[in-house]
Length: 498
Image (tube, rainbow, N blue to C red; front, side, top):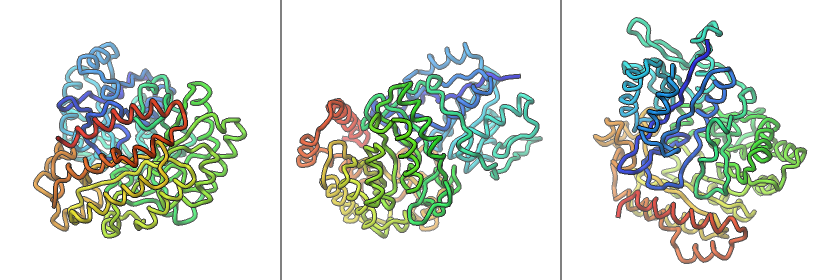
């Protein structure tokens, strides 16, 4: 018998700020109203469940800006039998309270998923309200199969589901090998795709996944799998969800979904939110270019992507421009090689700098991600990163070049957490998951992290950067992008105090 399944993000605001939860690796509450990142994995799950004949409601109370009353009315009308909630360490306790209220009201089965759950499924199921925990970054496949098991149309419970039996938690993290091309294309109408976007993307914008996991660039790929995937010690997704494995969809499958977004939904820009996109795989990019050309899609849309700097060779950047790539989101993290080694970036700063400059020389817009708050760094070393970021933003500036800055968080379960614990870098706050919000010191600090984070964001106000950005305006859409970007910047600055 088919089920009524609700995928629910409770609108848990804090002092009017929105929690960055779905499709976010580093968590914080933000004042920026421009950040509404499409939660791709739960959207994939919603699509799979609907395609199997279940009734599904996709209720993202955070990004749809609903309050608890509105969400409650919609859930009352839907009467869910199963409720799926993605959670993360800072919201874990409040989500347990929400789950308890939902179970009391609807008697529904509650399934938790997400990176924190993947590290700690047994801990998750200590809560009476949570019936099941789904682990790994393939929880869309796993939960869809599990619902079939509950319906009686599947004989065996899929691996990756933890459950309670006679007071004992059972389950296994050894999951099946899933073929990404077999996942249905996301039902964009079901998941309200047009309500999402970010300040740096042309509208209408849509999000997509070329694969799963961060592909490394320094070795030849094995088919669609990376032989040397990224292993950044702070990246909870790579360790909790992908177990340090990375693979891509086929270029044909990826291009087919893009064709739907462009032709049916008239999307202007598509953001590939896979950890390093497909930029690490040269042969895949060539096939992707061929598929777009065959479908008459070249020049009909922009695509932007996450990318590792060490994959950005001259040849590859030339190909990216031919395909239609506009913006690359590249991890700088720090300009200090000592720090890059500790966080297992597998790139020295000189390599990162070279990749960023190569991309910019080829006319690609670059968004750099930076972090502050490393407990082993001095203020002088933080300043080195600040100066490097400034220098790279001013290098061959194109309109749209930008950066993001955050305070490093060592999520429990990650190699960074283990390193910090071993070396005495954790504070007493590390015992309280609710404090992993960039507002509290989880790592011992040597200086004012918030002030340095704000200082990084304020590089956008550098007079030369603003002038170079202005004179490189080329499209009508850039005027609107400039305005939304400024509004978002002002809100980001509010996140780090006066």
